[in-house]
Length: 61
Length: 465
Ligand code: HEM
Ligand SMILES: [Fe+2]
Image 1: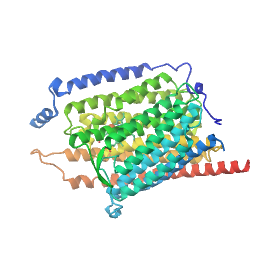
Image 2: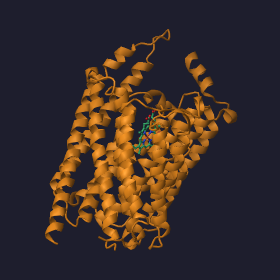
Image 3: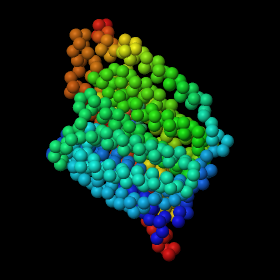
Image 4: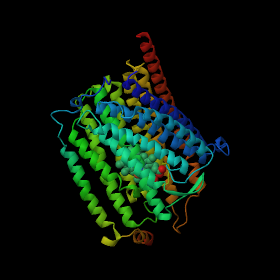
């Protein structure tokens, strides 16, 4: 039968198998925070911003 | 012949089929790239840009992409579950049905049958065929995984499962239609709803055809071909779940500044930017893995393919989210910038990773070595050059196009006519054809190398009997 199955141990680096790099964690949580800020700022029913208003403003200049 | 041999036959069949459809799709791609600057290359009615473009996208996404995904996912699943496929005969039938479906799909597109939804062009009878194909795939993958002989599930299996489940949901929902005749149907969605469903589908086709199965290959073949273990299993799992969760919310970034309600666009953009993190989880994991021994980049030709592939994936997943921002979308949307983005992904990430996986698989199942590492290196540098020329020319001309379209006189009238903007594209479109040609030559080197390896393997097998 199958003669070239895999030894799963060979796929995982023992010392670092559970590591989450700090720089990556900062990116991960930072982007979640940014997403919340962005959603609040650019949702018409929350902040009052709207594409229409932003456009009107841009051509008044 | 035992089961083991039989299953490999199906894997080989899918690989050969996907290479065949790849050649068709690439030739058509070169052809349409010429049509962009030389209209005489349109031959009505079958070989006009409108017909050929969909043959190109479907030929490569379904033929080369999905064909390779079927074969390579079967290969990976058997090895990680430590057993043959649960239904080997069904898998063989799957292979025949796949080729029949792609043939009919190509013919129907040449004939001009089209649902007018991007990447969901096929008319309803073929949609049913695609669903049957996918159900067969799902039954075999799920069945084999449920009956696995290895308890632990390696990350590649998770990525394969996500692909199987998500593509099924996406494809069925976006293709819901009321048939009017055998070759014509009407979508059940209309207007803004149709656009929203279409780009939820379109974006996740990228996510679950050009990302998750390719990451399954990356996570499997990188350690196999380098002998280096993946840096962090936890990072791969966290990145996996956050990726599949976030992807499904982001389709609205294709509809920025459209009548889609503002809040849906905003929500889509917030998730789009977040998507950098899960995408880069895999990029970081790949870099740290090979970071244990960078000399592999020089000594092992496959490492180059995988590392350049994941690098382009990394660039793609920064460029893509950036494009979703309102300020960027308003400049580059509708311009040639977008095909520049697309082809860094398809040529740089997907094709690079798939080709490297095939380079690994073919010598393995024929019990031999690759025909020529030199030819593989030539292939590598040619496709790299071709792809860079393609993407960079399109980025330039895309920004130029966007700027010309948006330029207004003080009284608000347009500064440039459409023709003035169009003509400026010509030198870039011609350069793109040159880039495409270089890429094609690279792919011919690849095919030659695989062909010679198979021949060597067959000769070896014959002489050892
Ligand atoms: C985090 C990952 C990614 C994000 C957020 C993203 C984002 C985007 C955005 C915003 C567009 C629309 C550009 C416009 O029309 O204005 C786009 C187009 C596209 N992207 Fe990406 N991208 C990502 C990764 C990828 C990858 C890895 C591929 C692989 C091939 C890819 C393939 C495509 C394709 C085919 C289109 C064209 C869709 C069309 O037909 O209009 N993207 N992407
Ligand atoms: Fe997208």
